[in-house]
Image (spheres, rainbow, N blue to C red):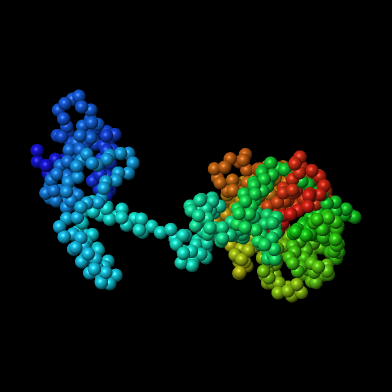
Length: 587
């Protein structure tokens, strides 16, 4: 049989990817060995090569054909050249000297020099060294273009390790430790653990660069829960004169923080908490309509027309502010002022330190039901169905910018950011207005009765209504994303963060909902409410929460602190929580 026909016949029967991807004859043999396990249909073109002996199995026949093929290839250089198959100038390699195995196949690449090769090679190298880099590259490209597939594979195997660089090890050797540290500082905890095991040099870079400390600092900057927990080790992020702990300390600290976070999340899911109670002891009518808190204090607005400031650690009343002639229905404060709205139709501005009244705004005709201020802008809403937008140049310089009219009933709540002002009313609608122009944008319809509470952030609006439901809205398109059902009476207050929604209602209950599940249309409604907290004996008027606690107020004249961080081993307990070593982020 013609050797050329034999070669072509066998090659055509083999999947092209098996032999084109090989860098040597020996590796081709290893690849072609896969034919043993192929279905017979793949080798139909080789039937002319099969033995007439029916006792020989197809697998043995395939191996026999592969062996004969390479004996032909290695013994007939002219055939190889004619069909551009594995062109080489060295002497044929005996088939028996090539090993076929399941792992990588390696054949000896060394051969005896032929003719004047060594002398000619030295001359070529001397000339090569005299050329410019561009000329050298061009010359090598010409050489490669004249080589065959086998030689390309050989060169590729030679170049691969040369092109690989351990830059983390190489950079410090060039005096660039800081660059190596900066690169590794972007790794997460799992990747950083793996990087420490690469080699001693990588471990040294991580240790000397204090990368576990930097990882903790990065988590503190980007995650509110981590930021709150960071106060557990106060010296981590403040200048100290004593010796800084080694990187190994922070390596061991990281899993402890993770464990603390998991414990807090489990407490939220299971409803484990310590409960603290403030009795407001109102003299006349009872009820705490509004509140806000921070690390040190809780400020509350009461039905008896007063504003009371409480020490958050001792739970004692520090100061009582009087001046309103009606119930204090809403309030907000920052580091300078407290702004309150009352059923006496006025808005008052107080000095947060001295308690002195700095300004009184008289505009609304009926009770001021809610207010918000931020970055020199304040928005108030009233039972008179209007919304007032104010410019706050200073506590004493507050001017009316615009009045928004459109609701057909009392406007119970407002919220805003740089893009939108959002208002909700007893007329069952939520209206969206442009913050910059104060022009009307759209109306969100869906609630079946009046809307009592609302929070807006990014694209999400969450509202609570006297139809006993909570609705989630996309503010940009106006679509209702989800309806949460579970409260038995009017939903009076609602807040949400990145993980959960917390709502309070006139049924005296506080419910914790899974926000991410609520935003997933595939999540069953039965899985959305994580926990129901029942301690108030009256209507829940207002609540605020962070990663560690809920603080709520009620018609029962109490303020409750639900602490999910300092939980006693036996579960829920009354009285003061243990001394706090964490801090939280106020909203």
